[in-house]
Length: 135
Image 1 (cartoon, rainbow, N blue to C red):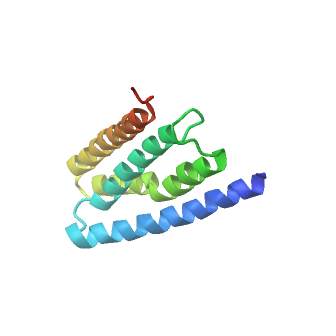
Image 2: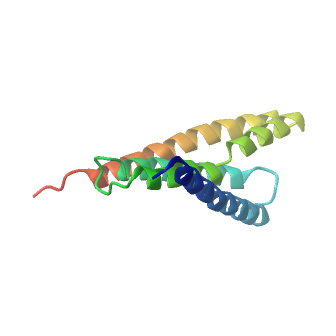
């Protein structure tokens, strides 16, 4: 597949991921309010899980190998458009600047810890699925 086609798949995945991020972020804002960026936190945790799970499950020697283009579509396109670390950054700065440094610190710690744990969980789950079957 040519370079242009790969960029097109990234763009399509990014568009889908961005729309999903916008929809979920709005739904969370309506559900729990705006005092804490719960939607962004949830989006980053879900995206981190998906990228960990999908990367391991579909790699070259995985149980469900996919072509590089499909993997790029999901990891760079969908996950890249869906996760929101740029939004995370501005929301952290705004929390701190608006007189909520403890909320900002909690948000940073929760985002880092939960996203890394979600990625590790996705990785481990996919690795277990990839493991050779016994018997």
